Image: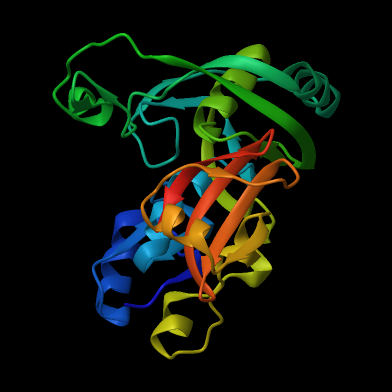
Length: 279
């Protein structure tokens, strides 16, 4: 079984599941997971975990993300992006200075409403399934953090911006909220995820690259900031059985290796280490 992490540059027009399905065939394994859904309209960084590294998915999903988004002003769609049905149109007289002022107001944390066309589940059913059946449901709100907002372009039709955000942030919803503050409508016309954690689009590979074996995979130490602890004594047996460790070491998260093989991630506090992930 191969265990690796691959930074994929997802093409627009594909779902994240499409990428996984293609990699199942290319890599010859079904044990593959992605670390943060990108809408079909979106392209860019999609971190893929293969083999036992699929257990890292939740950790990598939690990394901050950076995007470049393009907004078309004056229209509102049901999906909050350009692929949806137009619900309404509105005149706008937006200026560059107004956009920058509104951007400043979003820096920090706020409660963001999840879009109705999303895979978030309510009572075991995905929101987009309710939407497709025209069933009205109260959309949940989640606290998200907006770290950076930078206006890149502004023209008569809309604008382009770069943003760095916390996990769980929907850029479609952020655009909708920004445009509401601008007293107009706006919909996402394009989206590129340029970074996830420390991994940028410049390091990402196309599916064609991967199919041609023209790519470099990563290991856990290159993805997560972990200290490494090699064990070859009685403590190794404790790790193998998923037990706690008691070691006089600095607090923090450690990758535990046994015979140079990744075995677990432990979190140490006041000498006590508790298991976080067992590979």
